[in-house]
Length: 175
Image (cartoon, rainbow, N blue to C red; front, side, top):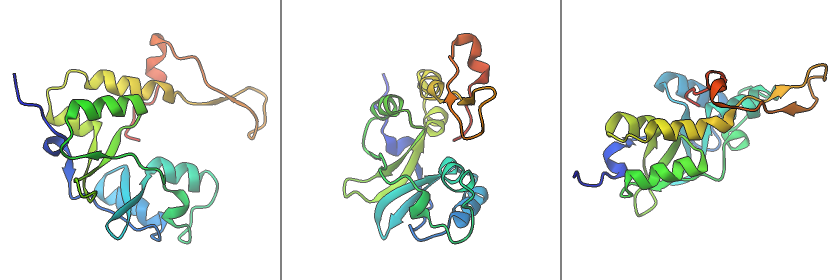
């Protein structure tokens, strides 16, 4: 039996952060440069949000608001879930599955941001056999909303029924 691994063993340390008043364009450029899909947003040393590539697309691009005057505070997720670096990996993974999230900021016990952990980190750095199942459980409800035929663009959407045979249609991308 191996000792229980903690989040500190698998997380990515030194997460790049941005400020709430930074532009959405800067966040997108940062994500491109660092090849990441999420950036913690801090006011000083306090974590105040998280901006993802999905936040930018849905809250700026899709609403035709993408310009250098749009601030992260306008598009970021404000209620950020996070974990402590000394928590067991299995406990955090269970929580990520239950809450259907793919990455979490990591704090020390003084609530200072010390890194970020993703399902990819857990998969790459542990022998956790449940990671594939976790990714599947997190991703299945994310089936794309499809517009009903003959309904204008602003009309009603419906979610397709997803069964095992339809798994190829479910987006299991980085976001």
